[in-house]
Length: 199
Image 1 (cartoon, rainbow, N blue to C red):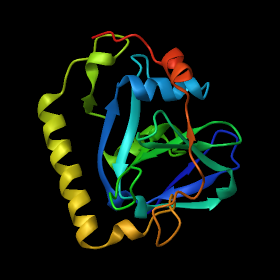
Image 2: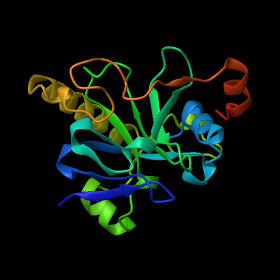
Image 3: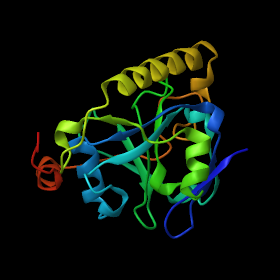
């Protein structure tokens, strides 16, 4: 059974395939926090500044409506692509710049299922990464983090071996070109949105 996602205003909609998920993590890095601030969407962060993310194969994500509202930015010329809706600035997913790396970090904030259904589909949020940048104290989850890193690495490798990296909604088929040109955030704008390191 697929899990629905959509932007806050409902124009952009899609589905996720739980079997294509690698792991679920909460990321407290300063870049994820800056991204939410740049979009004016700090509401997607938890009380400690974390972004709840499902790491998965891009092949497991489909946009079913409003794909023309999909856009992206990057915090630096070589940084990951951060995808969001143009209509209401809902953060959707983060991907590598190279589609040969089959990874998409989909934000749980755009999943429409209730929390219990999300937990059943992707597991509970037990992994905390980059905790040194959290806005409040967060206990590191070293054992869970190590296991999640292994699952993500194994999942990425298996997806590449199966050539599933070629199936992605974020890049033009058969090319390394994103479906929309990313906006590169100016350094001053990025620095203004980046929180102080609380570590």
